[in-house]
Length: 340
Image (cartoon, rainbow, N blue to C red; front, side):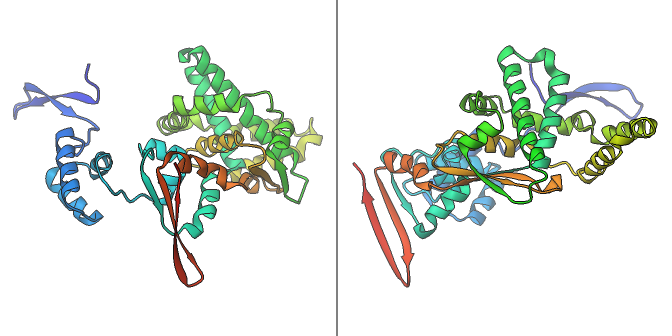
């Protein structure tokens, strides 16, 4: 069976159907293997900048991104951004192999700071709130289609995100921010009995973040029922205002908070997954900062990496040689570290 193709009937001037034509839907005209390989050979023959590469790709009708990735396998020198070489998941996703290769890091005086920023993470209350809402609606719509392991993973994800929301809610009255070790934070959130390694692996293997984003785009009303929830809450509040006078302040505050959070962040689950991955690091390598505020939209959880050297060990271990080029005062030094 062929997907992304739809049949369209062609009619003549009298309105009679003459033939059926197939129109390809959603396929990129630049994604052709033969043309990509031709562009790859052109890249390897002569050094080209981005503008030249784009111009040639338009003539050949080939994607410069995939051609560059294919050319990197046979190239002798590859220029790579900081985040691609230093961030292990990004490095693996781009197929960068360090085994028996020489790595030269320019501006190495910014190395530790760059690694700390790459592996630090942040998730806001608003992102957790909408992640929890979308996951519950996604589960309710497709619950009969999930396998047992996938359903278990989604249930665990919903439970843990709800616990993170409770952590921020419980600290609403605390004005000062808190800094906790990973172990203390996991215990205070009551998620210490869950295997974060398996949960993060499930999120990556199942691509639940991208699937949830597609679900929210395709079914926005089903994925995000914020406005409907506000209307129901107001009606229920107005109907029971005389019988439940004690809950007046609580209901009005919840309604105002929901009205403030009408903005729905794009793909809110990905920052939540990134924060959960931070909980798998060694307890001595980082700290969790809980940003407290009376306004829910200002609350957030941050993971701060304190020991970036641990995340650099894989590069030193796999590469044949690692060269650091850095600036100290006015002079430029090139320090070579060779590892057998």
